[in-house]
Image 1 (spheres, helix red, strand yellow):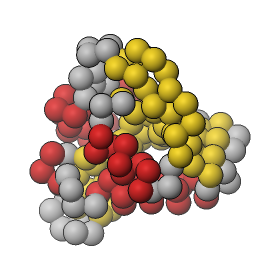
Image 2: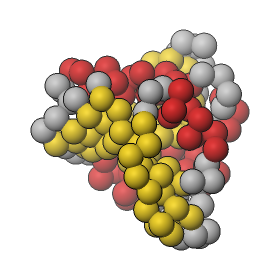
Image 3: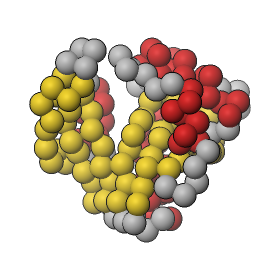
Image 4: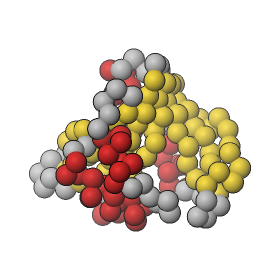
Length: 149
């Protein structure tokens, strides 16, 4: 499957929000997503679409300042999971960071999200901390990861 990455447009937000609803217990609202999509100075919201069909298969939200960035969201549509899309999204994030001269990438993930933790470790992220009871609905720890680019 060949993916095309592009900055999210307003017409993408409802589809992104639908993926949010099935992916996270605390999904982002369309308004919150638009905050990232409409700011090209310190934030970005990028979609991954299947080239042939145009289907939205995943997306990420990234915020950055100086030489550091944080992945705020990374999600893959249920139909496209376990097909390497998460890896391609992270590779695209790394490319974005290199273009922006970002040297350190951070993220946090629920401690119970084993699939995401496995992916991040496989992509070279290292655990650097933990925030106890950080998440609500349900209560869970946040594991902090960083990657030098």
